[in-house]
Image 1 (cartoon, rainbow, N blue to C red):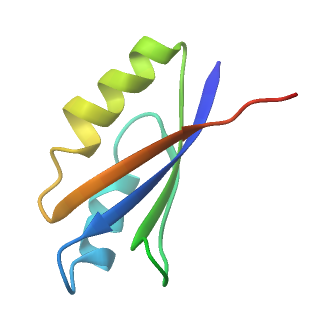
Image 2: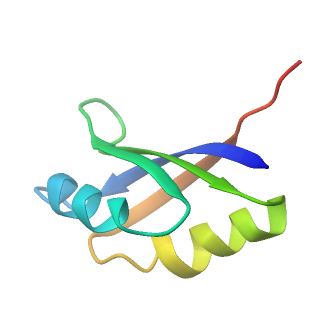
Length: 77
């Protein structure tokens, strides 16, 4: 299982709306609107890196109001 944080920038005033839309996507375990350089932080999980990529590109980036994403896979060193 692969886990990742996805940092999201949104259009002005869209953070809460984007977080709400992302929370219901299968594979998303948490989505919170936050302050700072990013507007929404998401924690997601998938069976492998390929599925994680598909989740981000096909589902999360398709949410209206998102301008940029940065995916940070979790590693255990």
